[in-house]
Length: 343
Picture: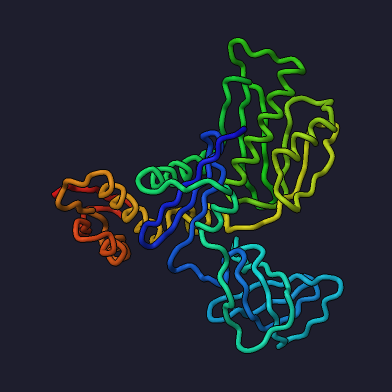
């Protein structure tokens, strides 16, 4: 039986939840104080249909101030512009698109939030039932390490010789499985089967951690695959609901489609230019300062020196850490770079 761990980090400004299975990270949940609750997965809202789009087979819906979503039509839906509807968020915003919605029924009143989606703690309880979340310094480090692992392009596994790469393009997620030469690793059919099975599970874990969806193309090791065995392993690895599997073709390529659920992790942390968002840079300071305070209980004061623009955003959150926490705007620091000082 696999060992499951849950971590809950409630740092001012942002709550993080992490799920690890057998020591490898599978989920990184992030909810910020300034997130739009109307866009959170599972949120329920009253919305107003502002535009019917026949070409997209759906409607754009106003969910309230600064919030909007897209409601795909089902065959029996008969909706019109201006109509009030009650909807649920089934996919958070991504790539400049609004949230994806599911129709619950007729709505009344002005567009507004009826109930937010599950909190991080509630989602952890669903993903790891019966597991008590670990808090404190270990939870902060788990979130940092999960983020670092999600940023890695691939992984290698000396026990089977597997070399794995997982990359996302505009069209699809490309997964490349290969056998890397290593002492004691055979390259016959049994070795390829073991590495393919391991690669499917590792790729599924990495994609879950990065919170990706859409079309996935997996280049398996070797051709002439046992289609039934590969499909069984793929269904075990990608065990989320609503996954659509395609057959393994003669070139050893397996395709499947994953539903989108959460905003991709790289979009949560970084801006369109790929650089850290200013608010996230500030949150990094607050989290590192909190870790230092929890790890060092003897110092009367711990001060973070940061770039003025980062310090301005982080300041109100640092104040919530208590009297031992301080932040100093240092013009000598470049944005994103900071140091912690005792005393």
